[in-house]
Amino acid sequence: MHLTGPRLSAVVTYLEMTAPPVIPAPPRPAVPIALLRTPNIPVSFYRYLYENVGEAWLWYERRRLDDETLCSLIHDEGVEIYVFYVNGAPGGYGELKKVLDSQVDLAYFGLLPEFIGRGLGNFFLHWMIDQAWRSDPTRVTVNTCDLDHPRALKAYQGIGFAPYRRETQEFVDPRTEGMFAGWQDCRPIQATENH
Image (cartoon, rainbow, N blue to C red):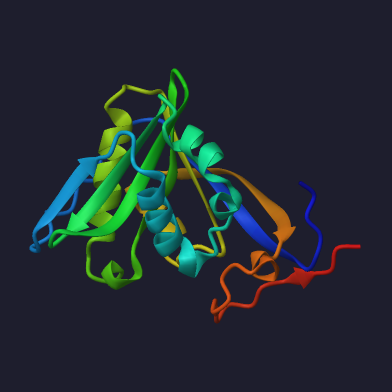
C-alpha cells in the first residue's frame, strides 16, 4: 500500500549492547508490581497496550495492520511479550524479538501515561534487558527516535546501550489517516509535502 499526504520526519538512533549491563538494577518499586510473560497474547489486549503506551509518541505502524497480520507478528516463536502490572492494572509492556540466533532486539518498550514519572520505568527497563540476556546473545539492540519520550535515549545509554547508527526517516503523517485525532506535541515536527 502506497500512502501519500503530508509527511513527517524523525531522527532514529540505533543502539546496541554487546555485554550484559554492569550498572546495578534499581530497587524494586515500593508499589505492588508483577511482570508476566504473555504467550499467545490476545490481539485485542496487545492493541490496547500498543495504542495506549504509544499514543503520546505517535506509534502508528501496528495500528495499520489487520488482526491476522498483527497476530502472526506477536505470536511468532521468536517474540516474547511481557506485561508490567502495577497495583493489579496493566502499567506497560515490553517486547523482545530474537532477530538472529545471537541477537535480541527490544522491539517495543514503554509505560501507560498514568505510570510515567513514578520511578517505574528504570526498574522495568533493567528487568527487560535482563530477560534479553537470558538466551545468551552476543548483542542486544534497541532503537528510539526524537518523537519518543525526551528521556528515552538517555535511559538506554544509561543502562549501557551505545549508538551505532543514526538516520532520518520520513513517513506519512498518521494523523491524516484519522489516527491520533487529539494528539498534541510541544516539540516542533518538520513536515514536508509529498509530491
